Image (cartoon, rainbow, N blue to C red; front, side, top):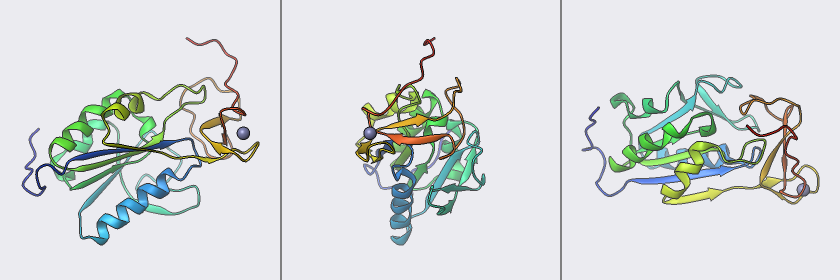
Length: 193
Ligand SMILES: [Zn+2]
């Protein structure tokens, strides 16, 4: 698929990753960047995965209740569709995508877009979700945010799952998860595959 890049100045392409545990303000930062771009008159496209069933499909949402309109997509490659072309492309909840997210992001950067990818970098075992393992080495900039450990109050780097569920993706909010520092984080005991 070929999309005209005439709307984008060449050499402006950029890939930024906004990652960290849940409850660290990732979506809030993403929304600030989106709002700033819009204030400058830039067109922005915002995407979220259809697999994330927590919120309204037509929006991204912070845990504080702020929301912003978004396009729901099933596959990462959909961000490349011509009708989605914009100088700034924001993708939230990126941990729901697989490693297949990397190439579309690199292609958007080649086309001159600023690409912002936000999501949880470490799963409930403390292992990195594939999109971030592949995106981080390619990123122009990585913003690794921290929240507050629910146990000790230190900066949080991990997301503690509070229920015993084996699946890597378990959709939920503060009913199922809390922020923890590396010291307070307790990975599940089940054997790794
Ligand atoms: Zn702690």
